[in-house]
Image 1 (cartoon, helix red, strand yellow):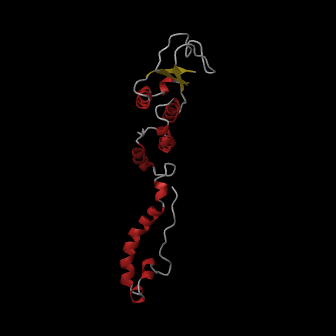
Image 2 (cartoon, one colour):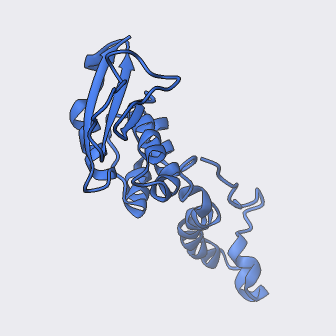
Image 3 (cartoon, one colour):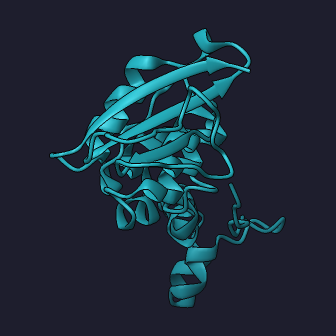
Length: 187
């Protein structure tokens, strides 16, 4: 977090609030001590107000504020995730909301939450061959199920993917009338 320097009492003992008072008060030792109480309260508050933009920026906000910022964007954060992943989700929430219900939005949301970019293939029926096609895994000859898609994670250790979390994300992001299958395979 970036902070600004707060004006402190000079070496001569002159207190900053005193410079705003008439001279008869600024020379009083009691008044200097009395105003120092208010300076000790207002100094940190001024520093916080000066840095308010940093408190609201997911890149710089203190870790404790991220869940609060996430509620603004209506995303849930898992406290077990690394800090950078939580920051990225809050930062990307607006873009993810714009792409909600699309393959692009779902892929990006799953990538941020799991750290692995999934392959998402929509089933249009008939023959489907593409650059990422693999015989027996994501090819279809005839038939097919319209309004379905398949989410495939290719990872070193399939047990490292939190299946319940992935299913919850897919359920919350997919259109209501669409079905899906989830495949987590080893490389």
